[in-house]
Image (cartoon, rainbow, N blue to C red; front, side, top):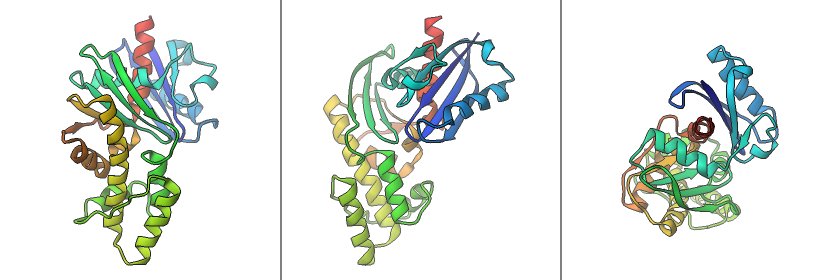
Length: 256
């Protein structure tokens, strides 16, 4: 029995096909802005890889920023619920989920059975999101993947004090002009994201284990800074970006 979960984010579309609520048959991540054909491409990829047809899929569940516009879905479910389900499957002992997406950041508290018990969300400002990192990488003429590498080279992270992306951009440019090196600036940028999201997490209350999900979770610079800010170890999956889509597929199986 196959279920399909699609997570239509602001900057990427993800799709996961799950067999019997347990085994991931295929997954795909497509970099594409919400409202484009990114989700169709992600779904096409997983169907091709699994050699399945859409008719073979019992339930399709959409989540994420653009879920309401995906008419193929049988259910349209909050990304909070889906990230909780996805992370609980991967890490049953996790009690706090930190999800940093392209346009928002979320912190979710989980019960022992994986049920969401509380959450807090920042979707009003780009600071503390993947978009913030994109802007900063552009200023430094780096690919987004380079931020992790550069941050690890730093011995003295720069202080990025501005809480607004626009002002932080000016602050980074000013520090560049005074000769501050790239690794220290990148480490400071990663720390800036961690400080803002850690403040959200502290409002919910930190209960270990703590997991990071979403694309930013793959950035060790942010993960390490977050671990220091919260004073806890942080677990993450190499498939961190797929947690929402995985949770959507699990939701579909539960509905069956």
